[in-house]
Image 1 (tube, rainbow, N blue to C red):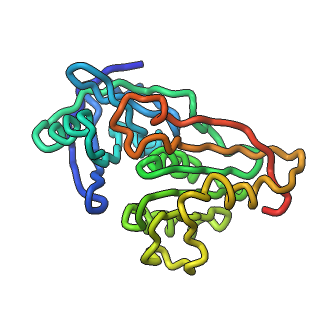
Image 2 (cartoon, rainbow, N blue to C red; image 1 turned 45 degrees about the horizontal axis):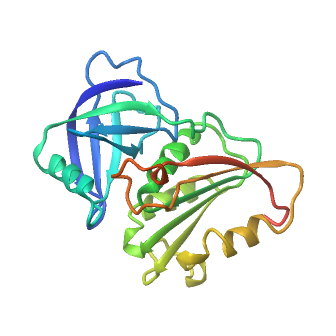
Length: 241
């Protein structure tokens, strides 16, 4: 693990409350590498706050983060103040054993909640360097459809890679942001049970598939809790995919 003080190169809003932060790694970090799916810690005065890395490893010298405020969180208040006032952030990276180095031999199932999409973005853009021949499914759960702040980017992924399919899962679906029919918007409570299990768990074959999920235990990554961290687990491919 390495600790760096990074210049904040740019900050812009991806929607009404989520900010994209681009950090420039300092001189001497040229050999720094991380794997798609890993995360970093933002160093605060008395604690560390984990954030998934949104950029792929192929982007050298820079790190992209997506930061969404969490109501009632002192950590989030401190992070937001830094983004408003600071010109640098101190970070630790790389961290985490939940990552993908190459496309698995089998169906890839990615599941994310809220800004957990950042981890999946890093993975998908990393895998895009190769031809992905196996089906790749991204389930993205949010509270409201306005939180699908990367909807257009996901649509571009679908257009470029015909084996990639996004399933947006919103607790309050109102608009069809990416041109899908309304039946493709699923209620949030069912995304880890009914819909996912019916599609992938009803029948099995020996060919392996890999499933990666970002925990939905927290609405934001701005807290040093294990529920904010991703897990990686094997499953098997459903024959009805």
